[in-house]
Length: 205
Ligand SMILES: Nc1nc2c(c(=O)[nH]1)N[C@H]1C(S)=C(S)[C@@H](COP(=O)(O)O)O[C@H]1N2
Ligand SMILES: [Mo]
Image (cartoon, rainbow, N blue to C red; front, side):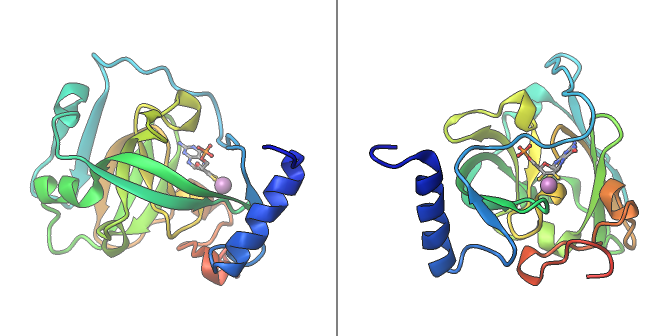
């Protein structure tokens, strides 16, 4: 932090990111990492945890934690933009590329979208094509440390190009859909797609 107060440092980062074209419209930069979710942080039991693929898919997988940890790994450095207007830059994620999971599960040709189910009630929908992009992953590490439970540990989805509500924490099920279906926030007024660069915050934006 040096000679800067933390707000001066934050402001400097914000100006820099704006000039670099990395601050979407209507967003402010944050250096800290806010915790944002509904309900309680689920308890992780590695003996009972699983990740399932369901719906319009050839292979109905059920991966245990140990099995998940043997999958080929990837790392992505990406920005996180929350619809409540904070952006956190250069998050270094590690985990398994969503594409790797798709290759194992083999969605049917009729599958166009995915409904991601978290532990508890939370769901969110994303088009399958967007999930197959290079920078989408199921992350179990952040900034070289195991992902904190508050931030979605043991496993969360990361979809950098969409607002943060699409990056579901505590993921347990990947449901392949033949057609789009709104998730939790999408049923409650948030935009069906959620592109921060087009400020797709709410469903009439
Ligand atoms: N399961 C679950 N995942 C969730 C949420 C939630 O309420 N439940 N909130 C989302 C929202 S709105 C954002 S901005 C990000 C925030 O991630 P963070 O708490 O790690 O900053 O998580 C997303 N994933
Ligand atoms: Mo958010």
